[in-house]
Every structure is written in C-alpha cells, then in structure tokens.
Image 1: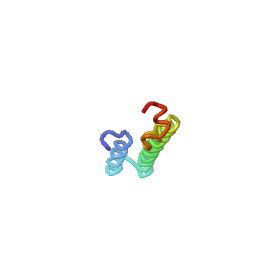
Image 2: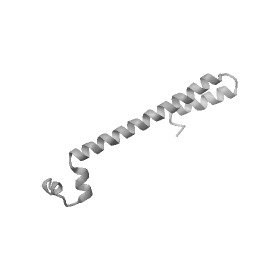
Image 3: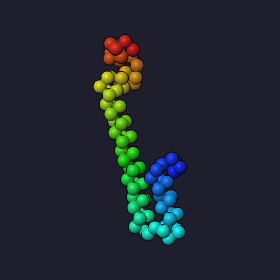
Image 4: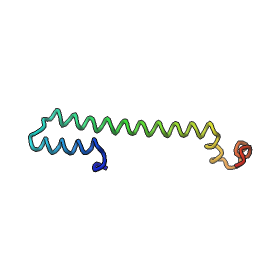
Length: 79
C-alpha cells in the first residue's frame, strides 16, 4: 500500500532523509502526523459512505426486503 499512497511515500522519504541527517525530528514527526490524519480521514469517509448507503437502502426498503425475503414491502415492489 505504501507504494501507491502519497502520504506513505512521503513518510518513507522523510525517514530516509532523517537517517541521512537532512531532516530534523520535528519534520519527520510532521510527516507521520500527516499520514495518520490522512488515513483517519479516509476511514471516516468510508464509514460515512457506508452509513449513507445503508440509509438509502433502508429508505428504499431494500435492506429489509433482502433480509426477509417475503415481506409485504418486497411483494408490493414486485420482488
């Protein structure tokens, strides 16, 4: 995953620069913080997308129809 993740690549570069003495610890820690924040934002966005899809399926009665199989909503919808 690090090969395709911009922030992860940045962390790897900052780690190497820190090892070579080209970057101080504060800059290294800032790169790690950015990676952490980006991953947390990604997880939050995925969670919110799943919530929105679940609400949409509930509002469309698709979630209950898929679970129950033969309830009245599924029959009324022609499923």
